[in-house]
Amino acid sequence: MVEIRSGIVLPARREDVELRTADGLTLVGELALPLERDPVATLVTLHPLPTHGGFMDSHIFRKAAARLPALADLAVLRFNTRGTSSPRGTSEGAFDGGRAEALDVAAAMDLVRRRGLPHPWLVGWSFGTELALRHGRAHDDVEGVILLSPPLHRTTAEELAAWAGDPRPLIAIVPELDDYLRPPEAAERFAAVPHATLVPVEGGRHLWVGESQTRRVLNEIVSAVNPAAAPLPTEWDGPAPG
Image (cartoon, one colour):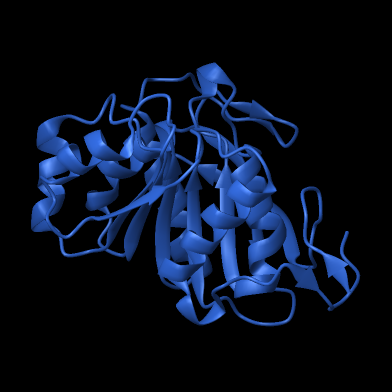
C-alpha cells in the first residue's frame, strides 16, 4: 500500500501526441489512458498563462495525468498551446492572448474525435478557463466545462452570458484566497449563467499549492466527470507506481 502524494505516477498507457491546427501549426502534448480498460470520460486540459509560467506540466494537470487514469478511469489530454514550451517540447506559433488559441482548442477536440475518446470535458485553469469559456461552446461534443481559478480577465460579459443559453454543466472552482477572483465576486459574475455551479474552496489559492489543495481539486473534477469514482482514495494498492 502506497500513499498517494506529490510526485507519484500511477500506472497508465501514456503516449506523446501531436495536434495539428487549422492554421498549420504542430502542438505537442501527451495522452494518458487507463492501463487495462477503456476510459469512461476524457479531460481536455487547458493550461495557465504561458507568459507567466503556465504549460502542460502545470502541477494540477501533471498530477491529473499521473493519477486519474488509474484512480478514476479517465483519459487525460495535456498539450502546450501555441508558442508554449515544456519538457515535452515547444508548440509552434506564438501566444495570441486567447484569440488564435481557438484553433488550439479545436485541434485538441479533433484528436479526441479521431481517437474516439468518450465524453470529453474541458478543464481550464486560470488562462485556460478563458479559452474554455470563449471557445468551448463551438464544440457540441464537449459534455461540460470545469473552471479552476477563473480570473475572468479576457472573457467578456457577453461571452460569459452566452453560456446561459447552453445547457451543459459549467462548474467554477474558486479559491477563497484567489489573487484575481474570489468567491463573492465570482458569485456576482457567474449570476449571468443561472445553471452554473460555483464551488468555493476555503483556504484555496490561485495556484492550488500543496497536496491537500491538489486532492480537493482532483476530487471536484472527478465528482463532476465520473462521480462513481469519488472520493478518490489516498492510498494505492495496485501495480507498482512509477
